Length: 297
Image 1 (tube, rainbow, N blue to C red):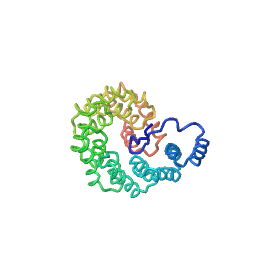
Image 2: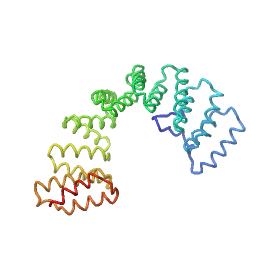
Image 3: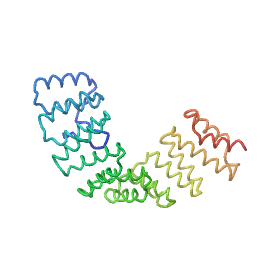
Image 4: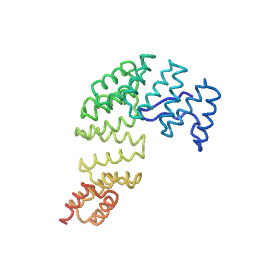
């Protein structure tokens, strides 16, 4: 099976290379490598095993051996680069990705990885160039669009980010992260109808997405549909009862309802929920602020 790195930070696990007794497996693979120094498969499997165990020096040695045996193996240079990333050796990682790109100049994975390194090195302008280069090679590839969108998003370039998220959704209407992030941009822009639809679409695909339930509740709350907001926050808590933000939002929504109609809300229930949050995070400033408001009642 091809050993792919499907995401920036998470390598795909090659078939059954992670049995219960990792140390025994590694020892056996070392013996296999000693018997057959040309075994690419053994080097690869051992390298991934060491990587899983965060033994980066040993993983590096395995993939370097493959480079000696297969100097034109672009995927192996990408694997090497990933290990250097885990070791915070970003310049070395970038050089590996560049070597992969020399072997195959339209290698989108290598281009994206270089963009990621440039982000880590705070060279955002050139990171954007790399992601756009990857998009130019394959406009239907989702990952470079998403990398570009999140980079824009992190730097408050919301119009540009929204455009890229929309591009992703056009390519893949079921891309929940793009749908969710686009919904948050709509929310920030005050386009609550579009935000509502985005979060609802996420929940159709991921009914247990606590963040989407929470954000949907925020849309209802800001549009003065407090009863619906409370119901939505409760659904979020049915998925994750300990979510700090959702517990606070539910308490705050109940307090808003209390201000409108004190007879249908028990103020003690709000206090109890706030104390629960403080038991988990005594430094939650929003809880303290809400407590100060409650003191007047």
